[in-house]
Length: 399
Ligand SMILES: Cc1cc2nc3c(=O)[nH]c(=O)nc-3n(C[C@H](O)[C@H](O)[C@H](O)COP(=O)(O)OP(=O)(O)OC[C@H]3O[C@@H](n4cnc5c(N)ncnc54)[C@H](O)[C@@H]3O)c2cc1C
Image (cartoon, rainbow, N blue to C red; front, side):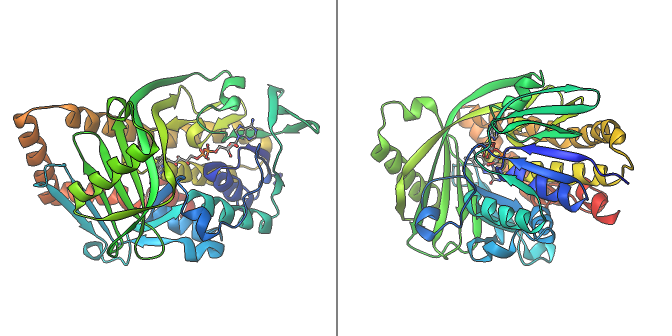
């Protein structure tokens, strides 16, 4: 078989994983990243605000199988418990790894460290890495995609745009996207708790917006993601943002925390989804395809499932001219998870936007019912852990 030649544009977590999975599936892969190659992060860098991801169990297994976790073991933190509350202090849903007979539900990792681990594995896999190589334009004809790079032109059988939320690849491919602001910004920072975090990931749906606390390596360090309506942030300076976080951690979880690194950063939140997953020989992955509210904690997890499924489809073809049908199958297999996630986040947002005592009572009853229903608990667990046998990732593993 003559394997397709693939260019992945964007060396963030989603693009780096896709490049690695494609290379392991036998494709010739080149990864072009606008910025510098990621270096090994030191502990001071990890205390700085920046994206952190709760990787569900299935994602962890995939990354491990591809050799991306080996370099960064010390930066991983397992979470064994998941706790959800509605901010009133009365309703609580608690999942444990133990009830599923597991040692952990997943691992929390800082995206900086994850990218570094992925790039180490990409080097080992022989992927052609091109840091500081921004894509300047692209066009397609005759089943080939032509890239414009500073070093000149290059042609590929397939191009995967993993170039982030404002994806130039998406624009050049003529793929439109539906987008709407959540009218919230996420405050993101690192804290040290006055007590051990107990490997517990917590989320409270406060009146101001969802407050997430993810355990990190080190026993008492955590990442905070507090998504607030913009009206609550108006007029606040960085010290005011930090105060909001300290007060919320104490009110919602009874925890005392000391801010680490720089003051919290604000990340404006948008819902965005491309109209189609691929056009011709160009496909989209990661935030280039879809962005969803961080309260779901699943954006990157779904991107990893997408990369894994694409690699599985491409491993089945016997000639580069079968790339089109592989892309179509990939789009179809991966559309329901994204639609479900976007729908679930909208429903949650609507539910928590309702005000008044009856709304608080209704939410509490819904959360309690949710926590007590074995079928619903099982369904959430499936999402928290990742697809089981018969799912997309499992399907690839079995081929
Ligand atoms: C606050 C917050 C918390 C989150 N928490 C979680 C979580 O717990 N779990 C989870 O699964 N997901 C989570 N997510 C989502 C997750 O962080 C994203 O899905 C993920 O980081 C997206 O990665 P990406 O590689 O698609 O995009 P990016 O990280 O934006 O990477 C895009 C890359 O493309 C490069 N690029 C751009 N243009 C060009 C060009 N022209 N040429 C070459 N390169 C280019 C950029 O330099 C960049 O490196 C969270 C998101 C937020 C905002």
